[in-house]
Image (cartoon, rainbow, N blue to C red):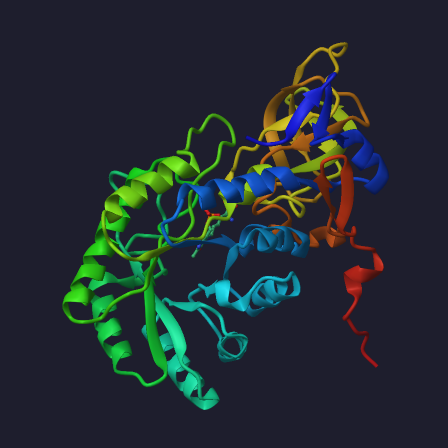
Length: 415
Ligand code: LLP
């Protein structure tokens, strides 16, 4: 459920007409709905009822500090993958003791900063990272809380779309090796074993693979327990999918119930790291049609947003719905390729979309709240888009459109 709906053929974000926002802040422009964001976070949080848990929003999905702040106010934790993401969370009012630090290549300066801030857990992905964290914690005279990201090698045959939880992926540590790492960690003076984690992939539309992974992780938990190593939390990562077109992913409460059922009477905190399921359908990208270019082969609608603003269609051939901001029944629908001004054939937002279009019309690319702005770039020296948060009948500019001068700020001419 989200709060982007038509009223009298005009697209609204909560109680504000999208056309008015585009008029005020220009295009291309990302528009988010606060109510949608909060609802999605709460769906995860409430599903756990009184089972001890922490929802650690995956910052990479959308890291605008206003979004982090809205979630921090709800009590959210955060899953980060860089020092930059940690500083964003802290600048947004998030608590360090609710941060988990994932990622395969943590640098020394990043680990030191996270130790000083006092984060909740390092999710270790490489054997050498354990030694590095232990040494750096010793240099500061602190104890580092750690978890190992195990790679559950969930059967690719049954779930071929899972790409990060397989042996051949760069992520995580194989189960046998993880057991050895836990034994090593248990003997280290500056390490506290806090938990175990996994993340098997993104945009999953079934519960089964999560449960298969959970079974394998629980087997590790039991084996460690038998050896006297007790884990305080189990972090199942992110990955719950959303509806872009006609996917029917499980709702957060169905997913969480299935997880809780598997845990039976176990006394272990659960952490989740959802990104897309919280932010994805809480945002749209609004763009204006600059030109219509019908040709013998194809009809192109050239819009002012491009692959630098939203790269998912170009990069993954991802399909995102493109809808008119004002529904116009007077114009015959035609099949259009919605393309941007960037000098690449791969610069498109959608292909073969049946739309009633005229020059200067506004279009909204749906499901753009996650992996939209965060993956945007300045390619073709295009300033990055503005971001606007709608809250009921109010709008707030949460990121100004980049200026032309900002494009070369920090660059230097030779003397
Ligand atoms: N935790 C870890 C360790 C992750 O690697 C990820 C995503 C998440 C949590 C959040 O996953 P989510 O709940 O959002 O599926 N750029 C791609 C998605 C890359 C996801 C990478 N890892 C896209 O636009 O589809």
